[in-house]
Length: 155
Image (cartoon, rainbow, N blue to C red; front, side, top):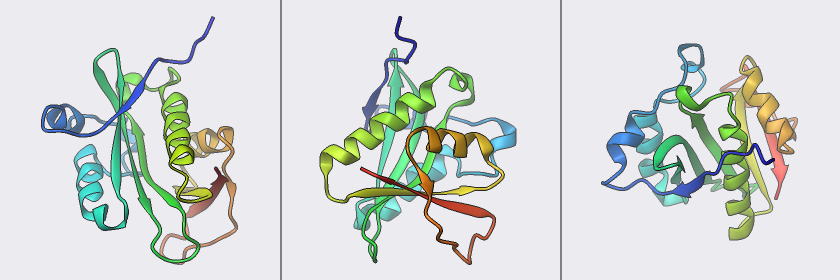
């Protein structure tokens, strides 16, 4: 039996914006990423560097969001800026299924050979998810966010 949730990637449109904006993570996770509205807004702001917001849909309902942009300086690659699953859908495999879809989409697009993500060191659940999907510590330390780990995955 396959326990992976059946989800698909969709864009944010005027038809689903309100639903997307209402997605929330648990209270203890709110310090790790932007709100859904913030993620959507950042996608708009980063449109000049390939910014896009993916929504994850399951059985007609949105269950999460991700924001990807392209690095505009070396090394060129994809930057997974934000990734969230609504609190109602956590712990059921949606995050893993959604991340796999995003990585497959980026790999299929093929503009760059890697994706990177910056994760707060205290966000152990997110780090475990990224490691499960092949991300490793890049060794880079961003002076602006010393409490974070920069992870990379080859596509």
